[in-house]
Image 1 (cartoon, helix red, strand yellow):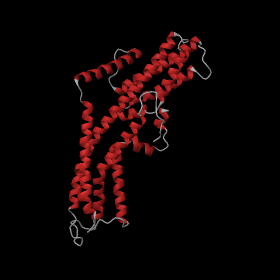
Image 2 (cartoon, one colour):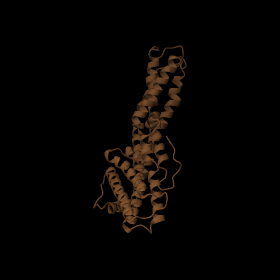
Image 3 (cartoon, helix red, strand yellow):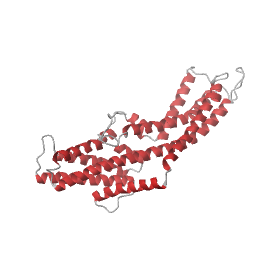
Image 4 (cartoon, helix red, strand yellow):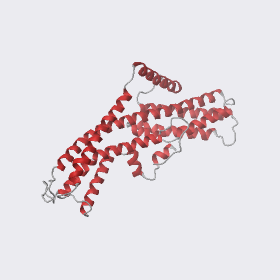
Length: 326
């Protein structure tokens, strides 16, 4: 299901908006949409921005205070990220040892001295080893002519696991953690885990030693994939939140300045002209709308991906929620 989920989406535009699109590109697209909407509303007389407009009040009170509040969100996000990075020497040592144990398990099954340090290359090693051990299991079962119940087919099982391994192997060509995470989304790993456990439960005592060993290795490798998926989830979300806080600063400060100075173009008396020629004011306000609302667009674009990733990676084990479609 992961392969179809990753590639065959009925609405690619929606998928780009929620997950695969560059977040700043999505924010700029939303900002352009705001500019276009403002220009159309002004052109058709549904919004008035000339002398005596209520825009001055909105700029100097609601929008300005809202933008300042938005900037405090960036500080809160940074505090959240920092809280995840700090830890005592003992906790950090335990985390390191746990990571090393995890890698040793994979290295032992893959029969390599040291596994790759690059996460994408590590997934490639997982995929290669998973495919090899699934093939070994099929060959051992066929050579021993193990009698399987109706509906159980070692060849179909091994082919399904091999196809999943081929899907994971595409991570080798990627250098973006968020793109690698997309490959691991879906419930295939959990389905194969259940099928593997079912084979072990039914035929564990009847399988040849080498077939039983291969099946154990497949199970451990699928568990390793599940763990690796959660690692990419943590890495992606931490990077996403860190980039979000930085972009909120980059876009928030200009938005505050534009809001502050634009409010000064209006005078207290409605019968007095604005500092900007009223003929150019609709264009100025439309462009300013894009700048002012860009921080909001940045926040929305980033949280859309954070929420989507969280939705599709909510479970690490074989108990999974009903799968939803973007």
